Length: 315
Ligand SMILES: [Zn+2]
Image 1 (cartoon, rainbow, N blue to C red):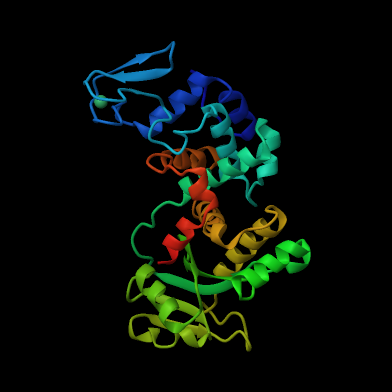
Image 2 (image 1 turned 90 degrees about the vertical axis):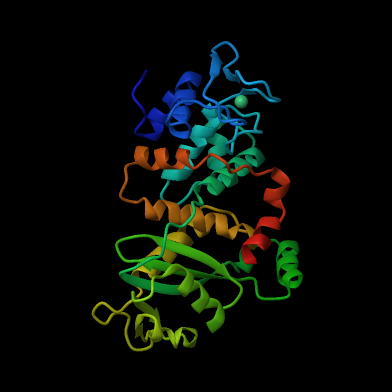
């Protein structure tokens, strides 16, 4: 077996071989050996000719492939295309557009868009425990570049939603650690403080700006406020880590993605957070982690283009 890839160029060569694709995925989704996705049995036999396994237990759907039960399951595209696209999404610092994927792997732009979104879903990994230590909290608004839109699009967005076309996003960063982002309906006290309590361990040092919605948090946290009208840094009291994250995010959205529908925004946020949280890894380590996230997250095109999930996230 060839050595696993370390660069995009190596990834393209490596994943052009279907056996390499299969071995790479199997080693991560079945680290303890291949088992039947339906009944869990390890009594399975592999057919090289058909590139699939068969479970020896009698039940419907006994045959399965390396794609079964992953985000790739119902896609007619091969793992060679999926894994190459995934490498790009995971390792490009400012994000990759569906046009770039379309050019790199030779699928239509619409297909590339779908792949891109499906991969992002895989990257939205569940948060692990509460943040602690020194934690910065900040909010920003995304969207609303109306001058770059067609007139019809502009009217649809502005009149259709009945509000200014900007989406509020809250960010919570543990210094030296993980960042989390949450799309919020508003910046009211109740909304923001509920998120702080959900994501930050009581007793942590909390740094925010002077927004009134944060007042009262001193009961549970060592809360220090930086008044941006006066200065941006006072010793350890600042939100520069979050500011840096927002600027990376906005550079990604502004420069790479043509436009981000509000109900798709959380996917872009997840993707940016994934790259940020795994920033100290090599490209191959980051990709490895991403591939481990492909199991058990299927999404259909209708579900993806509709706003069901967006609504679900809001509740
Ligand atoms: Zn089985």
